[in-house]
Length: 194
Image (cartoon, rainbow, N blue to C red; front, side, top):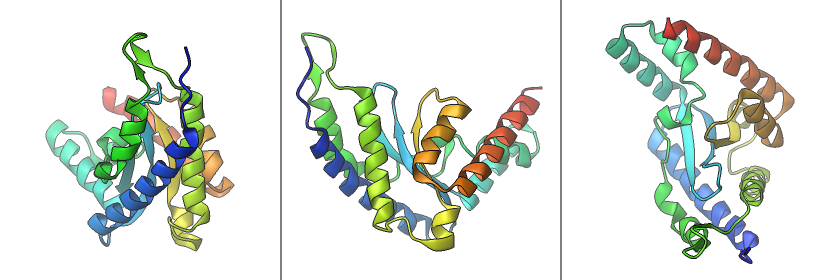
């Protein structure tokens, strides 16, 4: 059984929620420089939250981990740079996603004990919502926008999948920078493990 789900309505709700969440994140972060903003989604497509980080937030987190675990802070700065669940502004603005949550929750089937929606369609709606907001310059323009990586983050993504998602929403130059930083992060992650 497949639910006749209104993906267009989900997209409208996501656009509205994400614009609000981004505005709130910028206000809360104040003068801090955002280097990433996106949507974090589970692989089933049943939960979506905004996620973001700033250079200053990353530095604070790296210093906290260095103090706690006794390794150099630069290792944490590189390894946590692309780890959404560790970010200072992960789930900032989640309160704006009530309609999104209600729409996704409406697909739950007690009879089937599962959500009756297509995860790939939900992923596409997320990409389209971010792309539309980008075209509307919600995420700024010029150098400010170029410095901000937009992405759709999923749990258990490989580096190749992260890069593929980034290519939907960012310039080739930004994606090249992202690829280098992902590789550096993975390299130092294994250094920390020793």
